[in-house]
Length: 147
Image (cartoon, rainbow, N blue to C red; front, side):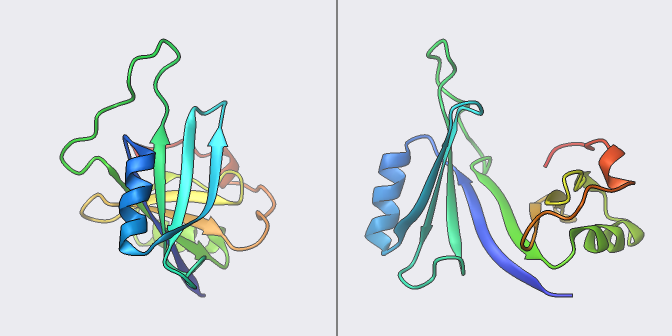
């Protein structure tokens, strides 16, 4: 079974200032995604020549529709998660469960799952290629805790 590091996610309160900061470090914006429905923006940055190798994902949660600001992040809450691409998300999640790891967000869609390290650091698992066909027991599993 192989695994590939994808990105580290950071929550940001000022995406323009944060992009400018990472540009000063030499990182470049490689893609951006705005979700009107989810009210967030994702900005992916990487060092030149390292796109899809070691990216930083900046997540900006838009202010609420009434204009009040998004959550203020304190005490490390701005760190989001580590992300890894895996060959078979169902097999890996089953091995983790068999070892006593809680699957916080099961791979109901055959594409994405979240687990936590013993120190409560969130880890996103993403299926390589297309999502696997939806199957049980994953399709019926509920979320547990936070991720």
